[in-house]
Amino acid sequence: MTLQNNNFLDEFLKHQLLDIGEDDGRFANLQAASEAICDRLKADPWQLSRYTRVGLDKDIDPDEPVFDEIETAIKEHWKLIRNKHTERPVSIIRAVLWESLRGAVEKNSHAAVVALTAKAESVDSNLGPEADACEGFLSQVVTRVERIAEKEWTGRLELAADAEQIKPTPFNAELLAEKLLAACGPNGSDGSVLKEANQHWPSQNQVWSGEFSKRAAKGIYEVVGRHVRSVQTTLNEVVQDLATEIQNARLAISRKTDLLWWSQSQFCISTTTGFSDIPTLVLPFFLATDLQILAPGHCPQSVDHFLAHVVNSAVPKSKKTSVRKMIEVLMKHDFAAAVAKTVEDVPNAAGRCGILAAVKLALSNPTSLDDIEGQLAIGSKEITLAALAQRVFWELKAKSIATSVEPGEANE
Image (cartoon, rainbow, N blue to C red; front, side, top):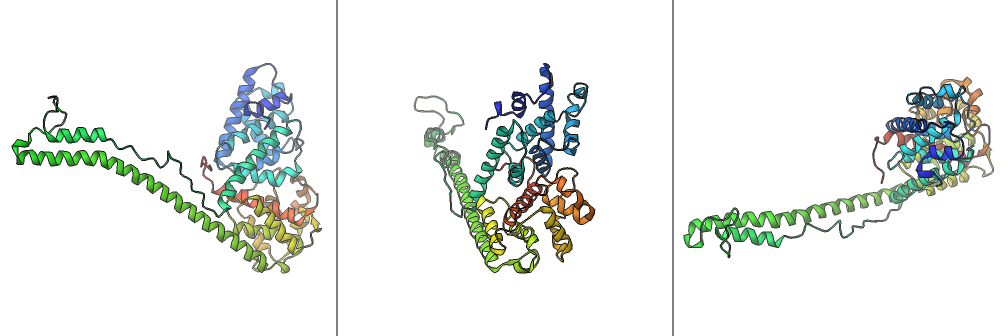
């Protein structure tokens, strides 16, 4: 990635896209605004999809609602920004947007939402001079999430404990010797008074033996027991890790088996009908929905290709359609209930949206179809049914992960 100091504000400044004048304090103000937005995105991961879509288009409508949100945040720290920029400073807002995204996905599970949105939208991206930095950042995020998904889907045990992990607390022979010596009598071999020592000598028979046994047992328990407990704790951790690896391996095998059965039976779970009973133009939507049901969580790129293969096996590979045409058929067909169930928890948001939000809006307001192409990055472009299925799948997965991840939860 070509980011200077890992900061998008620096990157936009380098390309003369950050018109803040000579006042260095304004740069600090924008950084503070970015951090504030970053915190909001972490608290509501679904918003990461909105911000990523908007960030990928430098020519998006300046009245985009995401820009309203960012400008409001900037004004909290740079109150007089509109004194310098009478019109909305889109390039400054976009710099803050990208810096907020960078901070929001650093070392946590939110990266998957950005990665999946980027996979669905990057083909239609419209970036400017900052393209290399943005694409490099997104590539790193996608690679990071792919590595996690591959680990979940390998089906192989990869438990590897290094020497430091399984190394127990060293046995303290000197301390044990000191405690046993103290149990023997009040003084050491050199005549020194011992701490917490037996106040009796062996010649005092039963009194000495009673004190010796208690003190010796206590010393052995403390020194040897500490060593044993350390070994036990380490073994418990290793066993738990192994159990988790075995469970993950079983789940990986089960998922793959379920997917193979689904693809061979050609029975759609979402509609409870055969693939052949579903209109061709909406088959991508339902197959993507099925795959999300069968393969929740992170999925490697091989699953994306598997979905494309299933779609291409069911329909002519040369068949293409637009998102609007797919939505028109979804609205007319008997499967409206199944469609509504798939998109029921998709958040409503004005401005640039994804395919799922467009479908939900069309179901509630059919007249919105007239404006649908202006809200989607893909517009009226026609793509193959396999590519359309993948886009729907990535959006479904981003939605699922965004609503299941706790803020700050680590993914590595």
